[in-house]
Length: 79
Image (cartoon, rainbow, N blue to C red; front, side):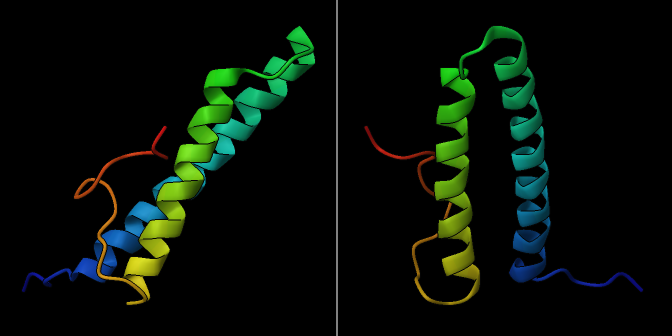
């Protein structure tokens, strides 16, 4: 019998992917700093956007808000 996955399971999986992306971005940024001596602006901006998404996803899963995160809403922090 196939189990039905709830919306909470989907967001748990997305949070795992988010944590892996944080790890990858951190390693890339570390190596960039190591070899160039300055931070990569694009990696830093991606990290900010990812942190914003993870915060919004956590609030949604915890039922603290009805505002759904990406892909149902915008990605990133508005300019």
